[in-house]
Image (tube, helix red, strand yellow):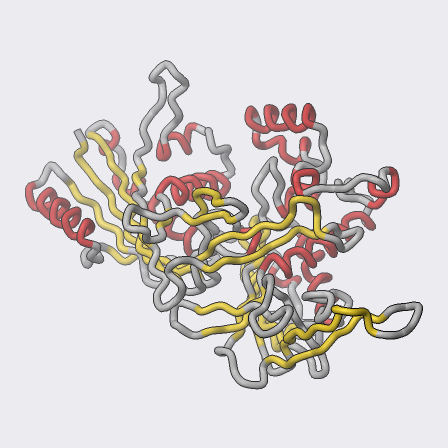
Length: 479
C-alpha cells in the first residue's frame, strides 16, 4: 500500500518545436498522438530521457543500484524486476496558434567529401511548431517501507529532475534535426501527500480529479531552479545575421512560387518566421570539427584515407552512423557497451562520433533551429534567376531556367548550441567553427544561395569552459 506521494508539476515550452515520433507512414516519420488525434509526449519517452540524464549527472550507469532505486529495473523473466517509484503519464502538447497537425520537414545527410546526399539519407518528419507547450506531472510513489527514509531524499531527487529540465534536456527524438529542447516557463511546484492523514489523502484525490480535467495544480512549494545549475552543460546563445551583399537560402523541398524558397514556420504565437534548421548548422559544424580532429591526429572514422582507398564505393547513412564498422564488429561493440557503458571511449575511438552521436550512443551536442527574431517582413527575401549554360555553344540549356528566393541582410536569427560535459578541446573546436562561420569560410545553405552568416553582438555562454567562448572581435562573452 502506498503511504506517501511526492508530486512535481512542471510547465514546459519547446522553443524550437518538438517531434515526438512514434511510427512511420511511407517515407514520413510521424508524431505520437492520443485517441483524439492530439499530439502527445509519451511518459515513457520523458522518463527514459530523465533516467539517462540523472544517471549521467550522478556519474553512474543507467543500471546502477542508485538509479534502479528510483527508476526500477526490468524483469529478466524470473519476476525479479522492481517497479519504478517515478510515474510519468503522457502529456498532451499544445501547439498554440501553430500547425496542430504538424509541420512536414525535409532533411538529408550529406557526404562531407563529395557534397552529395548520402544513399538513403533523405527523409521527411512531422514536427510541432516553435513555442509549443505542455504540462508534466511527475509522481513519486512510496510504500510504507520506502517512505521510512528521510522524505527530503524524494524532494531532492525531484528537484534534481527539475534542474535537468531547466538545463535544456532534449526529448522526443530527432534532436539532431534541431528540435526537442525543453525550457521551464514557470517555477516547478512540489508537494508531498501523506496518505496516512485524512486531509492529505482527500487533497490527493481532489488533485487527481483536477488532473483528469486538465486543471493546473495551485498548491505546493515553488522550487528555485535555473539553467546552468548542474554545471555540466555549456550553453551558447547567439544572434546570427546576414552581412550586406550576401544571400542565404536553406530550402525545404519544392517551393510554391519559385523552384526553391527559404524555410519558414508558423510558431505557437501565430507569427510566421524564417528558419534555418539546426541540422544545417550542425552538419557544417560536424564537418569542421572532423577536419580539426583529423589535423590533430585523432582517429576519425569518416577520414580521407578510407575514402581514397575505396573510391568506387557509395557510402550510406547507416555506414556513417556505425562508423563504417562491419556487422560483426557492430554486434561486438553493442554487447560490450551493454555490459559496461563506461567503455564508450575505448570501443568508439572516434571523438566526432562520441560528440555528435552514433548508433552506439547518443550525442552530447545539440544545435537548435535558428528562428528569425521578427516575423516575416516585406523586403526580407529577394528573387534570383538562374540558368544552366551549355559549355560548348555558350547558350542556355533547354528547360534549365528557374528562379528561387533568397534571404538578404535585414534578417537576424537567434540560435543556441549546447554541449553536455564538454572537454576543453571540444569547446575549442566550437570556437574555431564560429570564427570560420563569422569570416565566411563556412557557408550555410543551398548551392544556389550558400551564404555567409555572422555572429552579431556578444554571444551569451554559461557552463563549463564558458570563458573560452569569445566574440570574434576579441570581447569577452557575457557571463
